[in-house]
Length: 277
Image (cartoon, rainbow, N blue to C red; front, side):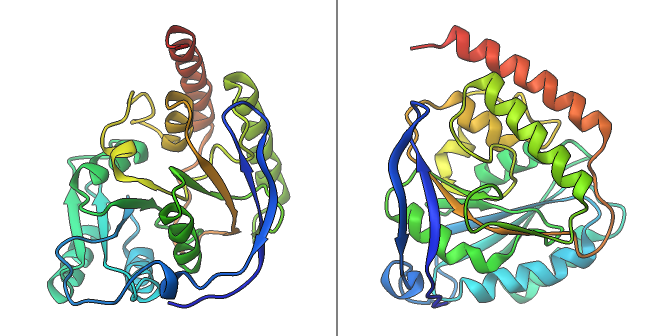
């Protein structure tokens, strides 16, 4: 899909400072970088991972939207379902029967979103993987531009909620405030220079998630925080996104997840101290 537009974005290096000033650019990624559309490509350029638990209604709308947005790129959509009782897996099987670009990975029981991301990355065939929340809070229209940045050579392209050009739609003020405070706390404790380390939207090289240094985040949500904390020297680009409120179903966020985040930060901080080199 050809999308042209000018967006401000921020690039930070791993030393805590800006690796380059904010830049402005115009691109049409599907024409210049994503290649030609092909039927049932044997080697997808990008695998889009959708971890699900009770997201039947959302994934039925999201998967076709992703395939449409990426119709100019060899791609696949991998849904990793944790035994959803609402019939999510059955809905995905029907989509997969109609379109081989849709794949289903089933796991036994609710075992954590980050663990589902790692499992999906191991099954992915694409050179790059994108991870999105299945509740449609992440707009698939951002994918071509994020993929274009990854194809330019960036290891990780963060779908950032906290750089110039980003926005929230439909999010209550208190939830936005809590998110910003948790982000600041995680960044400070782990000495990370990026603006959004807790987003669930990103594109990266497949091996970074298929072969993670640690899997501490597996029972929870914060796979990106773990990736950024355990891989030094990454080339990271923060792409501004519009973050939407979920379209259907119920949020999985809870006070327990905040406690898990605190415990994860402590474990990652200890890991970083032991692996300074």
